[in-house]
Length: 322
Image (cartoon, rainbow, N blue to C red; front, side):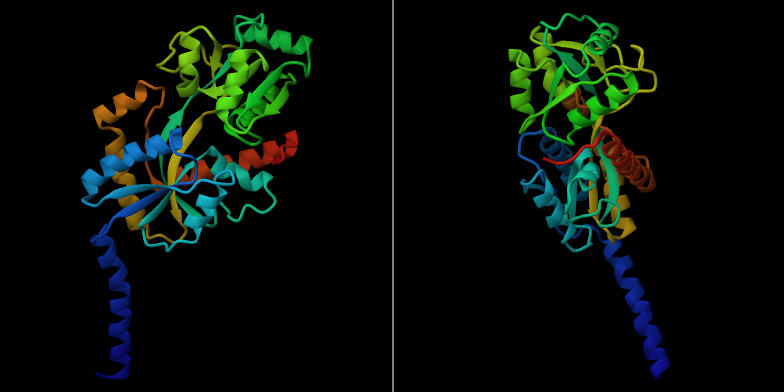
């Protein structure tokens, strides 16, 4: 065999190897890294989806918690893993937002990762302490305009979903609120119920129990459609702040360079997983609508939009990490 022939054979084999790997994929267990604490929405959604994927892929899909530094520990870990289709990162909105407000996040959400799919899209609800003398969104906005900067709202931390939703809403409604950041959602909710703060933008899934018990009052939800958990609570758009829309999404990303065929395999199986009636109903009951992206490109466009929109909001509103 000539040198040229050997070179051509080697080139063909080199091209064929990734294709064969993709066709036999997955050949071993996969990992989904959750960079946040166990028990939260990101964790329970990832575990629910992983359970279904394990059944259809013929390999175990394991969820591994690596929390710390507002998700930076787990995110940086996955960034450093091989782009071989066996390690994924479970994400929420903060994945797209942290680089705009942290001086050295250690990752670029668009360059270091590639999107796979959404896994859920959770409405938030504007909740107030019942002692606040407002019954609907119109009355709330009117009160906020009478008392600029006086109404206090809590969040799980600067740059978190509740903080960003409140900033977006304030800008569009033409009001000014006072932000009180907490080290997590639970202490903020405790103070809201206790009357130490006046309002929050919280996920429907975590506020539902307090609204049902009459300990909080839900004024409006942040999505364009009403939440099936509280069909009587209007959307912010319906209630007068036209065009407002926000939600807490979860999804899966992989290290940049992961073969597209592998990503498409996981996305396609996730589409099937979130449609399993038992799983879908289980999450619907707690206010977490499971969804999956129609394509890899669709989810990557979704991520890019969140990165760019939040970077602009952070600059305008002066949002900086604590």
